Image 1 (cartoon, rainbow, N blue to C red):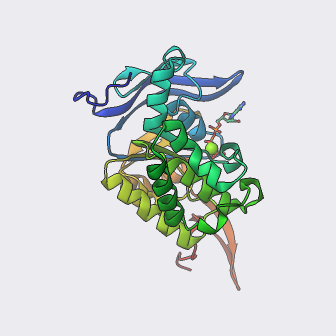
Image 2: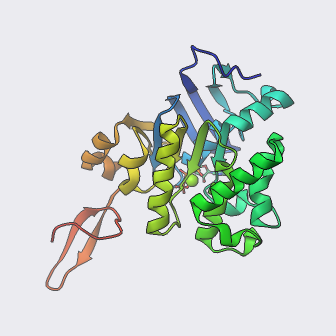
Length: 278
Ligand SMILES: Nc1ncnc2c1ncn2[C@@H]1O[C@H](COP(=O)(O)OP(=O)(O)OP(=O)(O)O)[C@@H](O)[C@H]1O
Ligand SMILES: [Mg+2]
């Protein structure tokens, strides 16, 4: 069983020399990372660098091909996850919201989707109802409750996928591109909710391409480089102020802009409003 009262376990995860390959494709290598209880960590990196793979490893959906991961003070192994009691306790404490909601959603209705996790936990009926109504109100998805998830819009699916994990109230929330496909108002509401959860003790690990939300959602940022190893672990402020590093790790890009009378190149990241100086 997971010892939740282990006073010494201040790190929820400890990764040492972790490598992961999908058959012949190297996805992550040489990863050493500690995730402390109650902190907010962002995982950054260009497409294909290994962010989703890292979250899947933390969620024990796959296991390192080399190196070790410790979760809550115990080695996280395939063998241990086969033990039903351990797997149950782990799934209760750690929740992953996938990058692609179609991978996450499988129930005939949104309501069933939200009820699945709490039912698995064996919670009392009244609490299940209370949690589902609470999370639907938080995400503004009450009107969708009888709809089949596969017939929702991309943003609606993402909200249902987020809600289906939030309803379980995990201690550690792993989020893969959580704000992708949310409209600006939904993004703000969702980030506020994450911060409230974090203040109540939830550990947050979020993979994102969105540098605009970085300082809100992270105390530390871990950047994965094109070689699939960690290029830097630093505060969001330090990462964002290092333009050469942002360019080198493909977190911002230089591209030509056409203006009325001239064309020039400058580094750029996408904000809802385009506010660089001309
Ligand atoms: N199921 C898979 N089978 C084989 N290779 C895979 C699989 N999933 C990912 N990969 C490869 O592993 C590497 C890391 O992929 P991963 O999905 O972790 O990247 P990512 O950083 O999340 O990218 P993105 O920003 O596009 O979401 C990539 O080279 C990718 O092609
Ligand atoms: Mg990804």
